[in-house]
Length: 353
Image 1 (tube, one colour):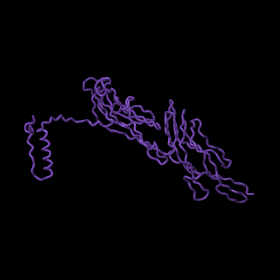
Image 2 (cartoon, helix red, strand yellow):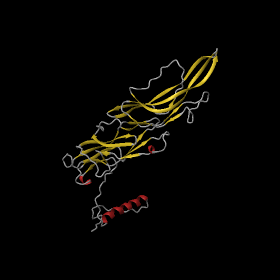
Image 3 (tube, rainbow, N blue to C red):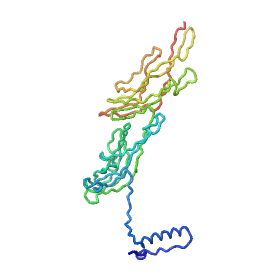
Image 4 (tube, rainbow, N blue to C red):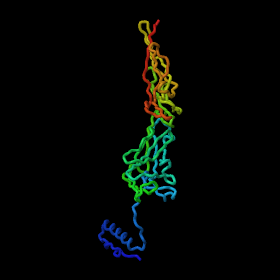
């Protein structure tokens, strides 16, 4: 049987008769409160719901997936979004699209059914996401650690972001695997998704597998002309766009080099005292391609200081690579933009007669 607000033990909320906006709102509140107690509807207890944002440490219990799955600590599903910064050197394509990755916990995706979980002893903890990018392959995994201990030893290609700090307790009194834990969030640093930006630039060395490397395309520029104006730009015979490299399989430490063939052209000539001075200028580079050279086999600079220049090879070191336990690592990106050919000249004095 429905009662009245007085029967429920609350004081009378008197209505207001003044013609103000505040009075109107007061009377609306009065009607809402009294209707709760004077209706015949049974109102359930109000409970505070924990917001289940992504990347939140959470207690996983047996009822989540049946009695065959033990209780433990898990993390709510969240995604990593890998996206390269834009660059004019890359045509629109897959590399302009974000790649979404669902992290794993003990090898199982966070949104799997049943959800992954693991036993953590009582104490102050933190959750990390460890990730890496290998060409078109992207990986991410969740790591639990003692608070302020860090994510542990990372692979040289891996990076890590701290997701949250939290406390693990066992309300039942037994701290053991399979028991239902209690989770108290201390601080949540990242919610729902994490954006991972990677730079894109000319001649970028990209690791595509444990022992494989590719080099992005880039430009080699040199001003064309024997007299002003000198012009360096696309459409000029002295300017070249180098295409993306093939995939290199690396088996030892070394470097990837850009190799070309240079030739000279006559810059000017002048006569004096029955002699002719002819000046030559490095005027063209062609046959540009990438090649790998081991640390023990770098190109050697030429040492001919008597003959006038005619033609020869030219090398630029693009990046340095180390190698250990079947895996290569990019240790130095030496060139990260267009290559501007150095101005080289040479002269030859001959008898004018």
